[in-house]
Image 1: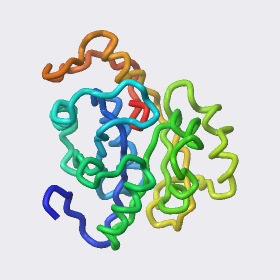
Image 2 (image 1 turned 60 degrees about the vertical axis):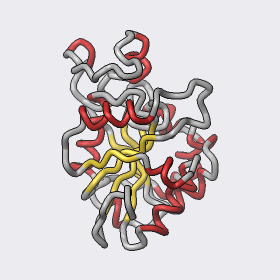
Image 3 (image 1 turned 30 degrees about the horizontal axis):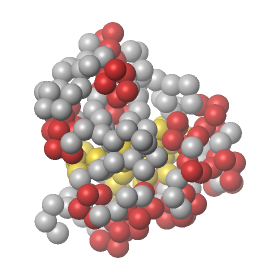
Image 4 (image 1 turned 90 degrees about the horizontal axis):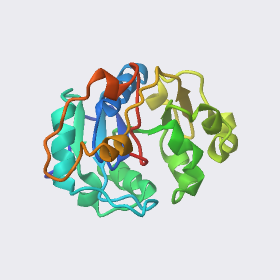
Length: 221
């Protein structure tokens, strides 16, 4: 299908959904860690048209995709506008459509620990857990709250200890991966005035990025 990434049968592909408003080094690192630790062949960034849980809507899609492509250079990572193409608004519907389009591909949903905290507020969140394995990646300040969240308690029996073969597991299955934390955030970049429509991406300095590790790469970004 035109505009849809190519995927070979049997591939394990991580889906990283978010507004990416803007994409930053934290997104890059969390993606690289997911590729390394979860046995993924690719990661698809699903740059969303908008977040149903947010009052503030993001910058234009074209600007966010351009920024994402400028900052993420790994050829295994595909920057996509699939939700806009599919006409889906919620994650469960997006996953359902992708599984129908790519019936021989194994998908893994990726999200930051802060999203696990409020995951039970997502549309059909239990269906998401039952459709695909879920990889939860640590985010500053969200560890304890994530591990004791409604979703974590509901699916505590389906948590696995390691993520290497997560894509080969039958859902529901989820893993919590502890990573060195990265303090970069899209909201902080916007607050500094470093992200406006049409403004080219600026490289983060060490003081911007914080200690080496991961950052937000989910529906809260």
